[in-house]
Image (cartoon, rainbow, N blue to C red; front, side):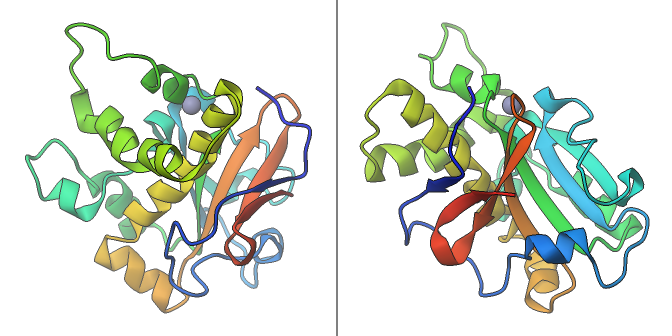
Length: 211
Ligand SMILES: [Zn+2]
């Protein structure tokens, strides 16, 4: 799937992020202090090492963690039955002083389109990824939008999923603290691999805008 538009407008008021949680593209491109591994990218595992060719900044600024559909468990999920852990992300913050954190989805996400299919017989939701998607982005789209086509529905889910994962991130106190005191800025991205363009979330406009 590829989009020929510069802006994807979402419904306002569906997410409540702390003020100034999101960094500007300018702060990412021209950081006040730039050094190795100042940016953590949580990307869909389907993207492989990508985004490894971000056109700005040198490559060693970025550390990429791969999750299925960039899916991140909330604090309450991690306190549940032990199937979910935030430890991998926390450990990276112990090793690096990340100034920027990018949650990165992509338009051709086969994982999300797979989750939209009926649940196969005998399916076991290892890691609880699917239920997290169903209770997050899927529910938000079903309850708040009237997409005119299956394609538009999938597109909305991909964009909303990134925001749901950022909400989950912010339920973890050490991270919300870093965001509150300005140590880390967040970015929500969706990559269009066909055009190599990036849509970046702008909370003041409830929209993703192409960088
Ligand atoms: Zn994917």
